[in-house]
Length: 169
Image 1 (cartoon, rainbow, N blue to C red):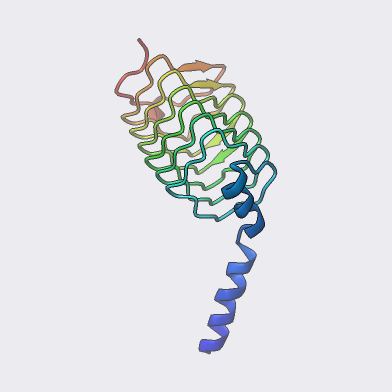
Image 2 (cartoon, rainbow, N blue to C red):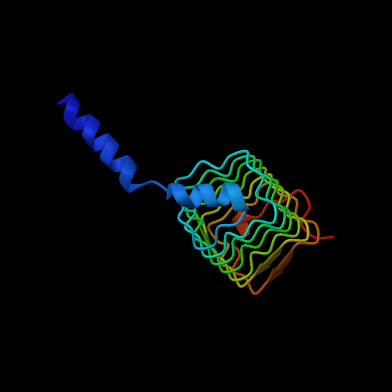
């Protein structure tokens, strides 16, 4: 019985793992467009100016990363974790952001235009001058978030989802 459980564990990890060559490319070049880094632990990395356009980043751990002006355009970031990350000026244009945790992240001037946002946690994050255009934010939360000069344009917003420290000034 123990052998069966062991093989199931090993096999399931192989099914849900990232491409090791893609991770090596990101570490060496700083860019990895169209890569598969799903389930990768990228915590603490410096991804500033990285091109991760069209990448599969679902379930990736981006906790405490630096990613100034990183490009996540058209990427799948479902179930990713960005807790306490510094991602100022990052592009999330047309990205899939389902169940993403941005708690306490610093995302000043982040662009979330046309992103498919569902059930994201922006609690206590700093989103000053960020752009949210044509998003459905109904199931996402912004409790305690700093939204100074944040632009909300053509969005669906639930009243219960936004309780910021600073809404608009």
